[in-house]
Image (cartoon, rainbow, N blue to C red; front, side, top):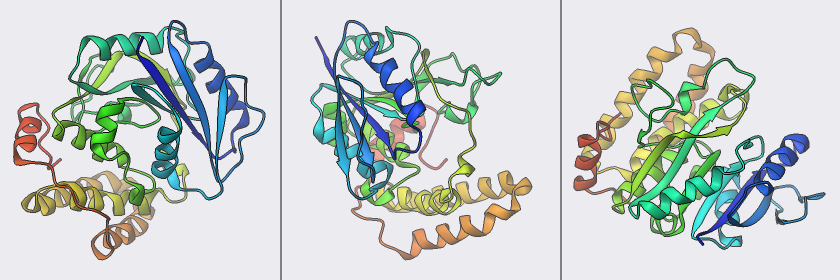
Amino acid sequence: MTSVGVVVLTMGSRPEELRRGLESMLAQKDVELDIVCVGNGWDPVDLPAGVRPVFLPENLGACGGRNAGAAAVTGDVLFFFDDDAWLTDPDFVSRAICAFDNWPALGILQPRVHDPLSESDATRWIPRVRKGDPYESSAAFSVWEGALLVRRSTFDAAGGFGDELFYYHEGIELAWRCWDSGDVAWYAGNLEAHHPAAAPTRHDMFYRMHGRNRVWVARRNLPTPLIPVYVGTWTALHLIKSRRDRAGLRPWFDGWKEGWRNDPGPRRPISWRTAGRMALRGRPPVI
């Protein structure tokens, strides 16, 4: 049986949601789970039986916290899970593992995300340019990390999440590196995870990290000629999208400038062959 290492990341600020998510994970059937709750700057307490704590005295960000959790669990597949996510299908994990078992090239699997309190699925979590039907599965070139399954070998080949990114856009880097390793990242519209459809702007750091990491993802992962094209495309798109949110432009551009000025960490560009594979799939790494 394929074993699964579950990494639930939390700062301890949502105890009711955390317990809901952990209980939904413990309710999964016909799977072997090794579950840890990673406290990012918080010592996990009052955890259900079957969940081990991992205490990080300092908040290492989403990337560092998930990496610490991945190192603490066993499993052929890793399941990264936010503290406000939850499952209602007790066969969710077993169905996902069947996909990995039946498709050796599958490296990353992102489910469809739904908020039961909302009338529709949050389209920002459908990882394709033309969102279309959220139930339609497709290749993915960016992934949402809040309920994400990754083959351990794919995760190791990618070098895990980039600690330097701290938070935001790390799913782009992981997906690109998955494709660069020869594996496939996939959006599974037939698998459903739940998460509040809250705006990411609720996080204080959102605009700065969004702008900085958009530049850093390019500088860390793209062939040199594609870096200005990718950043230029996304800068133009952000300006268009921000017509109704002018207040966020200044912190976004502060982050954007920081992205060019500061060291993004180790550079590991994808190959031109990978860029071509992505283009043939309809998502060249310039958008």
